[in-house]
Length: 414
Image 1 (cartoon, one colour):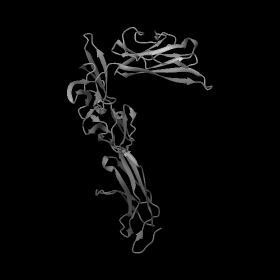
Image 2: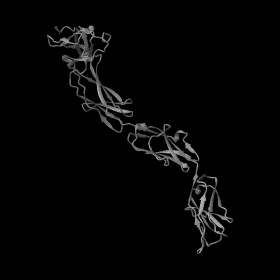
Image 3: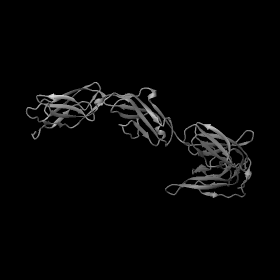
Image 4: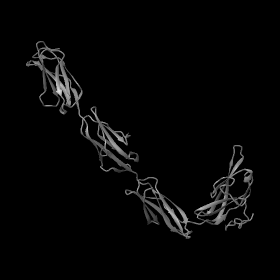
């Protein structure tokens, strides 16, 4: 594989040796020309690409492969090739090998996490970058843990950054970076090596509701409740009454209550809840807190439940009153109030009452409406006779219902 023109040419040069090593290792590299002209001694040089330092030399006088022993330091990381030429013979044209990659693996030291931005407090949909910095170490692979569990976000393990573009509350917790290479790995072992990320949720639009309360002194109050479904405490709740600030509370439970003195059957206007989490302010829908007492006509309606054979097995009575913000209903069979422990075992004081058609259920039914906060005044409905087949036999009043006292029969005529 050589020819003589104006000089001799060496055959193909081959290089082999380890692909990696650690500092202070001793590694051996070898070079060999597959065809050497007669009477030619070969001088080999081990050259690091891009390095201007003097190459390591080896002279082969009897055709044996060149052997280069290297005491590994950090600077040995790089690509190497062999140059073969004639020893003290300028007529031999030099040849070069392909390059060989050699990596110097260094121990990882002093790993720590840096947050960008540096705060550990974030809001939902903000972004954060966690950077795992090492003082020493080469060819490092990075693994991220959230509360000791691998994070779900995609990241490049060869890069030292984890970027979360749109944070959610599930991203809250303690982040750990495990930096490792083929030589060793570093797992953080003290609190300063962790970074806590707290993702806060913006407060949602509050819902508003109120209860009507009669105090022992005879005065009335509306207990207004403001409640948000989402948000990170503490949240400041304000109650607006007719667009004016009425009261404020700082609450830890996503809700707050306010007591507003009101008068029965008078226009008390509107109330709104304002929730503030220090970054945003959100309002509830306005709520009319006027309380109207029970009055006007009380009416009943009926629905039936039938079997597949078109047999009625239950009757559902519904009661409604013409006026009243907080009505409470009572049900009667043959002028006897139906209590919870009665035949049907159903909760009373409800606008709907089921009648299971057993023989004992037949009779005369009616309902009464009263204020939930004050039952001294009641309004009576018409009376219906229901037979055991669920038919309404009679359902007429002989007089218009009106407000009555404690005697449930004082305003009725059958």
